Image (cartoon, rainbow, N blue to C red; front, side, top):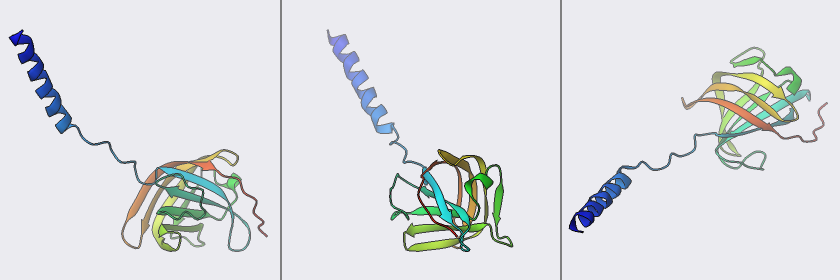
Length: 152
C-alpha cells in the first residue's frame, strides 16, 4: 500500500510540473478575419474593398484596428491579378487603421488575388508597408458581403 501511495504522489508531482511548463494558448494571428464587398472608385466606377480584422465585425468601417484595401476594379477583374504601390496610376488605396477615424496610408507593397467568387469569397495575399515602418504580410480568404451600391 505504501508503494502505491508513493507512486501516486510521484505521478501527481509530475502532473503539477507539466502543468506549470505548459504554454498558454496562443493568441489568434493578427488580422485573422477578412471580408470584402463592392465599393465605388473615386470617379464612381466599380471597386472592391477588403477589410482584414482581428475578429468578426458587422461595422463598416470597423471600429477596431484593421487593414483596408480598396482596388478600383470590379470583382470580376481581380482574379489572378497583382496590384502594387506605388504605381502610376494608383490601383486603389490601402491603409492600416487603429480605429474607424485614424488610418495610415500604404507606402509600398502589393496585393495578389487568387480565386474570386463575387457571391462567396475573395482570396489572395498581401504584403504592405506603412509610414510607421510596420509591415503586414497576410494570406486571406475574405467572405463576400453583398451590398447595394450605386456607382456612376
